Image 1 (cartoon, helix red, strand yellow):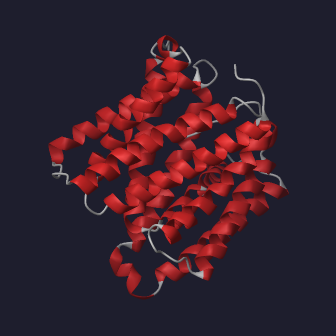
Image 2 (image 1 turned 90 degrees about the vertical axis):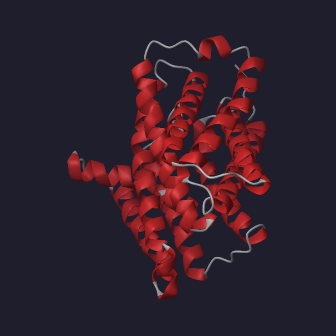
Length: 300
């Protein structure tokens, strides 16, 4: 077990968030040229390289391939594939910043679903966070819902982003259940393998020939995704979740940064303000749930 070091953990988390934002930027660039299933395959298959190297260095490869609950890994893997599919569709039609902001709906949607289906009555803090989150989404997406942009598939991107957040909420529950009996290494490895196989199966529906640019973007997305996962696992191993949980919301900064610097996309004032409101709402909901005091963290 790595020694607790908050400073190192925050640097690792910063690197992980930046790397994952870079992966999203690569997917955004290639998504309009390559079928989503083909992207899922490359993102998952190439991610096995840094994950396997990481496991080999830590001498956890044997532990990662042994499990008493293969059916749970299968369910988690399929849910993760659904999250990835909706995420990549969202990135096809939306900017990296807007698509990333929609991911923060996951904890908000999980609370809303509990209120409707489980008749749970959250405290005032959580209730305020949920309402604030939906208000932020309206503020963030309103500029994209007016004018000619609708003809470019904006509604599809928004719908996919919301579906991604909903399936991500379910995936988090499954991951939390798995962490009670399975090491994170096993969860990461099974996820990458299952999604690789699911992505490969979509070749039956037609893949496209890849040019050097598309191949580089897909391989880069896969490697960055695997590296980001490794960095986040190492970060969690070195600091309490009470420190790291609120820090993950800074990922929106990297997302908008890649939009601006690499893709030349300037977010509107309304989109930027709405995204910040969603991030604040997600942090409020997490705080209200007592997430900051938990001993474990579930990552999609």
